[in-house]
Length: 566
Image (tube, rainbow, N blue to C red; front, top):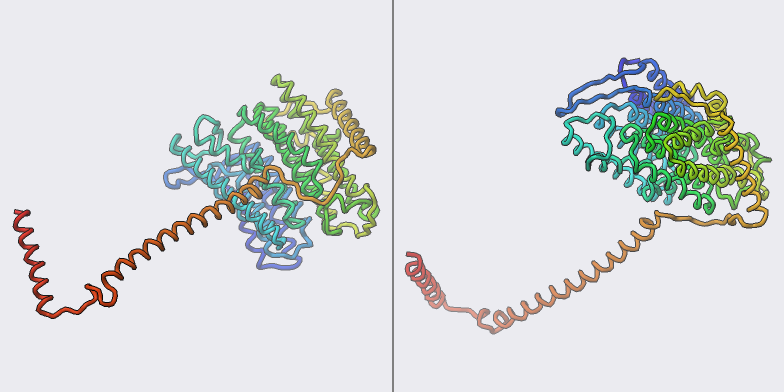
């Protein structure tokens, strides 16, 4: 390995070898690159490398500390898992852009300055959109364009914040920034867009389900968690993040119930889980930040697992609409088992990774005396159990059998699911393995009697509520529909506003054109009176008369200049 080379750069450079290879060699390359990045992370150890001067700014290309290391580790593992899941894909564009996307996310995590961060930040946006466009449908093209506009806007705002920050402080080190200035506010907004803050979140539900089967899995792991890392690095203990995160955890629950497309259900639950992480950053204590990093790690694993299960269902059946699925436990039993493991983990059931990380964030809230926040987090955990943890596996595998008889998921997909399931359970059974990677020395016992009983009671009550709602027909019917929330503003409202403005401008242009045409017509009429046939300006004149007129005009000018300009 090259001393001090950012691990993400290894993946990006290796990605350009993909078009030059094929078959087994290409598959081996796509699997090897994330592994090489992981080896580089732990070969280098903790420290910083790649110090340069650029336009008077101190650049630090590679910085590895405990916070960066745990995010870089899970990104490399997620890249390997995603590439295993996508081994059957023979699309060079997808493979190339996916690898650049993975490398960019890893590179951004280890950036020691904000200029390097910005470069990788924008590269993640540009490369990831091709995973959406790779579906090659009109809907995916439109969703990709909206996604690209939002992601690039985040980068533009980030760049503006970096410039202001440099003017204020004279450095671009990527460390604590805070909200004490306009620069901090702009940078927080940039991070918030990619963290899917409320009203800035709909690109997740809009774009992710439109990506390819494998593209959605890869997308779910990197962009939002990179933003969470950036928040944890730059804004720990920022109080405003607590209510923002709380809204993020609560509002998706309604849409999870109403949404028919199960990949969109998972996208909404992704929003909710990001809210837990934002709250952890807002609380800002060592336990809270440990919980945030741990939750990012386990969330990538169980959310990827659930997206992989739904991707396999889509691959085999052609749909992930709950109204069109059911009874698949007969055809895809292994996928069903993995889906249940992911559901238990997102529900925070004991002996799963989700239980560990959610308990840490909730305990951090209690330690700070935020008992109201703790109660609301319990409510959210119950809601997620009820709607995401139960809805996805039930309507896919156990609801009314619609006669779908398909093959089990391909072997490579099952291996990738097993990879994620291993971490979902392994991190829950052996939490100390994860604790060793956390940014701060953990002093925490997740398996206290209170924590375990709380989680079990929540799951029992959520399951009872779900069953009773189904039994008495109170659970909303699954029907083919498109659910919009805040994206109504730009997908419907702004479209109508643009059309109205277009009509207004058209009417104004017609009115202005009419006035101009009237003026031109009057000028033509006036000239006709003097220059028309037989008019004075249209008549021929003798040379002597013309000379007399010219001499008279010149004489008048001479008299004028002599009289008034002396």
